[in-house]
Image (tube, rainbow, N blue to C red; front, side):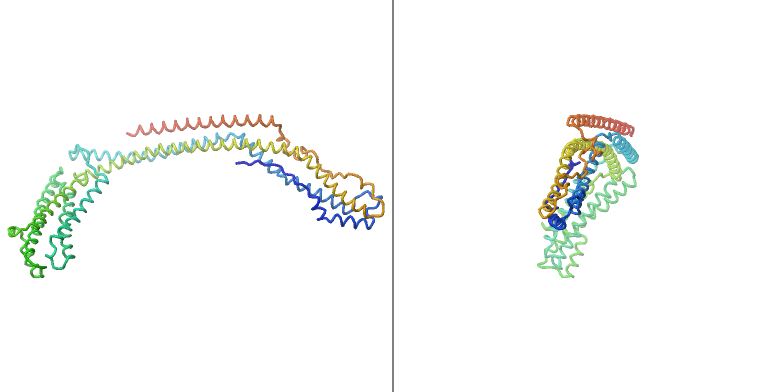
Length: 467
């Protein structure tokens, strides 16, 4: 924001000057020597000092009155309020929009090719594997729920098995928890991986994959049944002991449980509970693994790849619109700021015109006041000199001294003469400039919006061609 600048003319301090020069002392000293002589027509040294001090004050006060700063401010404000800088702004913004459009097209072209390739491969995969339905891709929330279910069943089975086998394992609670953890991992962790990796092969088009799934099922189902029944029989046999096994007894019971089906008559309620929990959790884990994501081998991967590529392409399309809109908004902001700066410059120009008017009116009075101050100093010197001398005073003691100052502000501040306008002239120029600023601003905004619409049309046509 440009600030108003006023011309400041300093006031001369007569009293300070009298003390600084020692005028009283000089006057008495000159009088004691009869100076100046009655017939003298030229100033004494003391009077010359007074004249020099007054003219020096004038010579310093005028340049330091802010006249240069006022002149510069007027020139800057006038230049800004009259300059039509929107043309340059529009050219720069137009170039920026076109460059941005090219960059958006380039990124979209590359991503479109990727998305198209992934989509074509997905269609090929479907036809090649006789798939009609879309892949049953699970969301992150669904996968998290499946993982939590597995962890919850694992923790529950470890807790239940530990409780049911407590007191039957030498080594105490830690050993019991370790064995329960291994059993739970086989029942739940391995079952989940079986359902996720092996079981889907049963539905594969390739016969070798189907046989792999069948063999896996043929091996894993008996294994799970065997492990859980062996654990149940182990629990039944251990209940017959009043306390924890020794290592020898543990070995004997383990040998008997190695083929659990010969000891089914010894099953207890707790043993049956172990078997039921193990088998139930194993089945749930297999199903959870099977449905963790699209079960058909490879279908989920290619579907997710195509889906992600399509999502990235859609995001890039939206990003292109957002970037182009942001660039237009940036351009509108720049144009509006420049308009506001010009309006502010116009106001500053008017305020500084007022400063010139006031300065030109005050300057003559200030010069007269400075001249009067100088003559008052001279008269002060002369009155003291007269009261202390015995001879007549010179004739020029009664004369008013002319210091040779310029009384006409127009001659002293020639560079500001053109700015010394009347209120009517100032108001007329201010109004005209303000109308020009507003009209040029409106035209620039309209032009920028037209350019933006053309860019958006080109962008939409480009998107329409990406099929």
